[in-house]
Image (cartoon, rainbow, N blue to C red; front, side, top):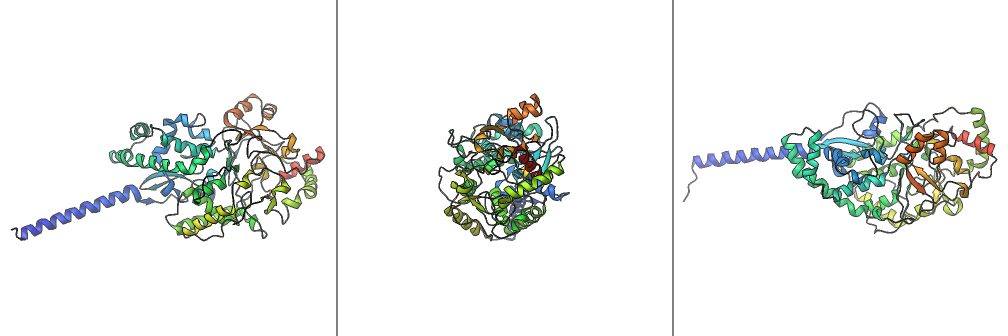
Length: 502
């Protein structure tokens, strides 16, 4: 029989202390390497914060920095073209570590996620030889191929090459990781990242349905926002709807508060800017926020920033006399929808006549489910309109010059094209090229434009960077909105000159 002696007692006490120290060290190690939150450094301006500031997506949807870094090198065959992430039309400012809309934050380890600027920063060039584009925060990112980006991440995870050996070989070419961090990447971060990306696959099942003309790719500068909401935020079953629309501008959001009855989203699916910001941010998080208070603080900042952000000025000289004449044309032909109490409210699709597919992609049941999901997160907002959509918003026209292509689905390349009957509008053009056409008010989209304005250089860039858009494919119709199409050419010219001033 053993006796409890002082020596035994000391040994047990010592062992207990050692065990406690080891457990404390392991707990600290786990916290430090996986959960320690390091706030981002303060930003020099609101624009910098908007473009690179975290909205909290790194925790649930973040990808370890070095995995994100090497994916294009390991899987170039999964990209839509050469030059890595740039092949997807992502905006990248000279001198910045990450593209616009990509955030980096340390939560145990460096993680990369997205914020609102990835879809809402516009870019343009005045000449094809201009090396550095002009970037406009809060503008529509008409160059970004969001669908290709979604597919790329899932396709990489599905590939057998997404393993620790292959990725670590690439990571070690550039990263100076400690031995411990190498083991964490090899045995923890890479396997977990693969698992999480694979788990996204079922939610993206609908973007893998191919077959023209019924299932065209979105192409550059578009997203299927309501289907994204339906399949990520609700339990709605997979259906056969398709409703890709242009990325919207989000500047000067206070205009939606200028008179009662205004709604947001192209079909008026949401009541107010606050709801849209919350829902869009939740989509980027991919889950409930880790802290509702911090999340709503960021939403509050975004509300204030976007409320006051002015629409950008047209970057070319404007003929003021012609613009003044154009205002009279606008008042007589356009103001009743675009400068009245009707502005910002839905116009029946049967009246405006534009492509109906976007309306079909959303319904009352999906709105109810989405509102319930957000409420379950403990977040209060006015929410989505619990009704079946039946029309499209009569748009505010501030900064309209930078919102090409036009109509809700981006089916009309320039404002001049929009002033032609639908039968005379381009049926095949290129989306996503960033050189501007000031005469026609839009981006260079056709071979004829490229040749006439800048010649072979622009033509080559157009074909290299753009994605083809055909109006005969489902959801791409360019019919409807045949207003002002019978105006005399001089009146059309004057109207376009006025629209440049807005």
